[in-house]
Length: 297
Image (cartoon, rainbow, N blue to C red; front, side, top):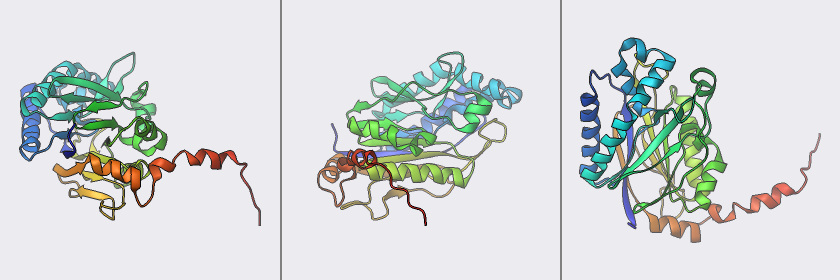
């Protein structure tokens, strides 16, 4: 396994396409740019695949169910494209997530590709109100730890990053790099994911990678307006930036943000950091087992 890993987080805008070939060309440009700058792991955002709804035409893209089904229809071609690009450039890619009809209702799935093809996927676990109440996108069945030559990788899609026990299960299984692709309409929504991802990096003493959708796509239902900035976070500890921010892009500025991380540094921080959040996590159970004292003034 590599020690030094250069990671690229995408602040990704959605575009209208008249053909799948135009989508292929866009993804190929983005992957070539990141790989050309030395990135070994590329992270695209949550619902990055929704731009494929444009292939069904304006009426389909503007329809809640129609957009989901149109995007899902292209999943085999999307998988083949990303697998080809990962092989051609010798990189790992977390593709933009999108709907997959594993049952009657779709899950929100992000797939990890490597030089040898599809490695596996992670379905979103915690659904937002819009996904539950309007889109009827359903939760996945559990978490996956990806053991790769770049390190042990976990994925917490957007809202998932705001729930510590999900990331903790991954960390206890050895996760070193948490990928947090997101899709948020407002700065408040973006900040919730940002704070969540930074907290997960702090408490698990690992790296978190935040890749958001950015810009307007008024023609596509559910992702009409997208806000954020790409960033990579680590624990604010010895040898890391005091802010915990390894790198960040501009607000709503499309493009890649890069950082090179050291897996050895993650291991060293977990073993001998100024604080030992990763090690001390289990002590919480002892504290909450003691009956709560309630005082009234």
